[in-house]
Length: 353
Ligand SMILES: [Zn+2]
Ligand SMILES: [Zn+2]
Image (cartoon, rainbow, N blue to C red; front, side, top):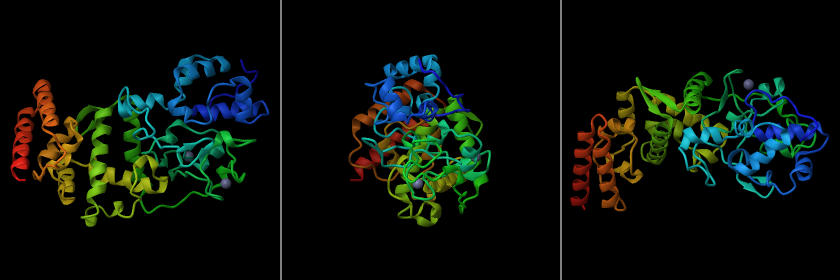
C-alpha cells in the first residue's frame, strides 16, 4: 500500500488522482507506478476508459481502497448509460472523447478543462472527457482542450511536478485565458446539463416521456450523423454545422463540438413539430434511416413524418424482417403504423428501382 494519499477532489478522474499520488511521493507517474505495479500497463493506454477489472483491483489494493471506489473514478459508469452493456470497448466509445494513444503519445485532445476550476482545485474531472461537455457550469465559460501556449493536448500524468502544468512546455494550465465563442454559453449549458443528468441517472425526459438513456443517445447519434451528411446539400438548414471537420464527434476539438451541442438544443430537443420541420428542411427521408437497423422508439414519430425516399441498395430483406418481428413482439404504442409504414417503404423502394 502507498504511504501517502491525496484527498480525491470532487468527481476526479482516476488517472488525475494516480498522477497526484505519484507527485506526493516526489516522483512522476511513470516512475512511481513502474516501481509499485511494474507489469501493469497504465500510461500507454486509455486507463480511465478501458482498464481491466484485474488492473483496477491491483490499483485499489495499492491505494488501500475498495475496487468499487476505483471503478467510480473511471469512465466505466458512464459507458453503461451511453452505449449499453457490452459496447464501448472499441477504439472509439460513443460520446467519450478519443485519446488517440500511440505508445506514450496522445494524438487527440481528449481531456478538457476549465482554467478557473483548475485554479480552485488542481484535479481533472471525469465528465471533462465526455464529448457533449463543452462548458463549465460553475464559471459559465467554455472548456479548453489544449495548452493555451503550445497547443499540446492535456496529459496530466506526463507532467513532472504538478498535474496542472503543461507536460510539453511547462505553462500553467489554470493561467489559460477563457475563450470567447459565438454560441451562447447559457444555451449550451442547458443541453449539456440535461445530457449529463441522463448519463448519471440512466433515463432521459423528452417531451414528457421518460426514455432509457442508451436509447436516447443512440437515436441522437443517428440524427447527428444524418444531419451532418445532409448539411452539404442544405447548408441553410443549420449554418452552425457548416465548416466542421468531417470526422466523428469523439475526435473533434472542443471548439467545434460547441456548434453541435448548440444544434442539439436548438433543433433536436425542441418540440416535436420543430424537430420534424428541421429534419424535413435537411431533406431527410425515411429510407435514409433504414441503414441503422432498429430505430429507438422515441424517433419513430419524427421519422414517420418524413417522405419515404429511395431505400439504399444495401439494406437487406433480412434486416427489414428482423425489424418487423421486433415491432410486432414489443407492441409499443403506435406499432401498427410503423409496421405498415416499413412494409410500404420497402415495397416502394424495391419497386422503384
Ligand atoms: Zn470552472
Ligand atoms: Zn504547453
